[in-house]
Length: 335
Image (tube, rainbow, N blue to C red; front, side, top):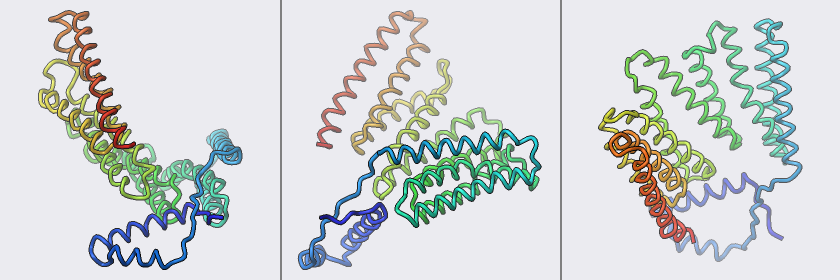
């Protein structure tokens, strides 16, 4: 009968393996020493407890969602009749109380999913609770400065919560709060700088940031965030770079020259990282670039029907290359 490994045990084991690898790399320990310990110790069979979707979990999360809707509808129904302090007590009180309920059930009992549902509710309610409290203190929660303060406080709460109780949902909300803070703070500081491409360049920076964190998480026990960050990072990066080209001929020659190199880099990264998300999004945005350039430069000279035929042939060629890349390099590496 194998020993059941919980999620916390799995995280500790992963950290221990990383430490052992570090000690071997820097020469503190040798492989022979580690093997000697393994051969002399009594082997213990560990069975990873895999998460399964069952009726109990479904009921937890559906019930949590209904509870959240009930709280929101209740607050909305009586919002105009409440005083400012009553609004703050109810919204912030609901956030804090569901947080501590979730914390208790997630860390003190074996009902992780039950606690997790309360933690999700608190994470959704905290922005409303903090925003209402800021409004009571005289800080408008709808201005760039107010949103920045709210997002900064949320970033601190979510990130500290993730590192203290290891609930994965807090890592996701940390990125949402960080993204909101970045856009609201740059709005507050630089909105009137006169650069009409300011929004696109911010998206470009955000996309690169997501990709960097996605790559970083591939070497940690937070791999569950990698593909999510890769997808949104690539989508934001390629969309913003496409927008920076403009949608009229020769609107931005620099970006029209750089964009094909960016797409080549995406295809190269799909092989290097062995990740299909790079290949799929790279292919889709290549199709978009072909259609865009065809419309801008050839629809008037060659005519729209011939331009469409040429674009179709190019897209078929790109699709074939994409398929071959996936077959020869990605699938073989995963086999």
